[in-house]
Image (cartoon, rainbow, N blue to C red):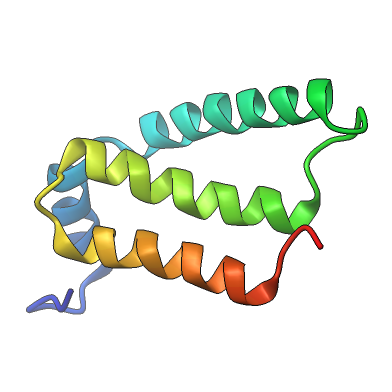
Length: 94
């Protein structure tokens, strides 16, 4: 999505309107990522998620959270599909 301004302050204000407070999103993502890591550790080889999977999941969780705030934001849907496609192309977890 292009913005009519390059001001970081303006972009952050716009994002805040679309997605809420950044600090709240960070806290929520941490809870989700902890849950995913706990699930993995309890069921697969008793190890934490591999680093590449954790990073990919974090990107995907971010987009899912943004979509939960604004499901009409087309770019977030495209980004979500893009992250999944890139992960598949990397053949992560193999």
